Amino acid sequence: MIALIPNIILVSVSFIIRQALMNMSSPIYGNFVMETVSGEERSIINGFISFIWSIGWAISSAYSGIIMKNYGYNIPFLICFFFYLISAITFVSFFRKFENP
Image (cartoon, rainbow, N blue to C red):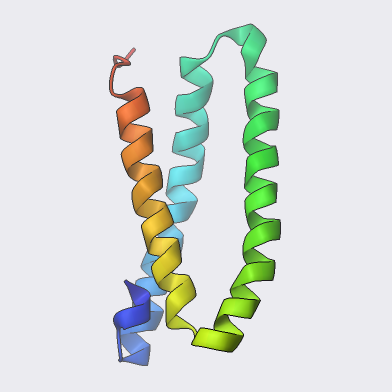
């Protein structure tokens, strides 16, 4: 919850830790997804994931500027937190049934 931390040093350290975790999670996520789909579907799934990722960046950059201008910097961080939370819950609920290879 970077938006709620009042100390700039603590925010900076938290952001660096967040970036490290995000950089570690992307390859793990990609590997997991490719292991759960069949060989014929991998290119389609990879394209779909890239498309959704790009749409997210395009939409979020436009709307976050409007939100920051009207409501400040905290609201985009809080919205991002809730999207991460929803994403994690959805991910676990969809892939809970898969066993480790």
